[in-house]
Length: 354
Image (cartoon, rainbow, N blue to C red):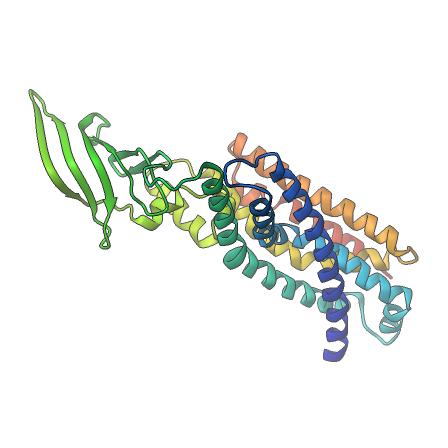
């Protein structure tokens, strides 16, 4: 049985790898072409090509469910054309036993998908976007950065600029009482975070509102403590697609702790989990179709079916995820609907195989 499972796994994995390379070649080409219209400053054709290459791991994470389905259809279809699957059934293997062996290939692909989606794709995607922005706008001046609003309990901070060195420039601080009335307003000409995660504020001036008076406190140098550290503040600059699952969970906890909207990041996290788990199902679905309606079809028919199902799954996932954000639906439920639909189709198709 182990020899047979290895043989099936080799057929599925080799076909999936070939399909993934073709899909990545097409996606990388379209990514490169899309960047040509946005070249400016130091961001020219070589940088656009590098951007497209750096995006490939993240694109492979997004395409692996489709590649697993098409690869499974082609790999198992080749075995069916050579009557090898028929011989396996004749030797006494049930359809469900074969499905378990095929699912082992999906498990290997799922582990690969998880590793790429957690440790390779997001950091390279973030690096690519940062490289593109710096090249476009020639961000050599350290005073250039992104303004940001952040919340830490009763305090709301407005940072005039955030750059990769976490130097924030001018800072505005609004502190509120428990009844949400304004307690104080403060400004610092320059701000930053030291190695011990303390906030260093230069030329600090704070206006405190009391019941019957206003008090002004000034200092050339002040130290403040917030729960926000440099790592968490850096996450606020990153698109959800460029965050690892650990980064997403950490930022979701921060948002909920401060009673902020975490819907967008929860949707990304659950979509990523559902997409990764679905990879296990795709080769089993391919087996159901190979034993069913595609038993005598050629590779072209299997390829077309795989593309149609893969596109349908991708579009349904994106549509439900976006709709869930608009209508405030639970992302832990809505993002699993396409995977559950595929699971039901797979179970029904396998139950009809004789």
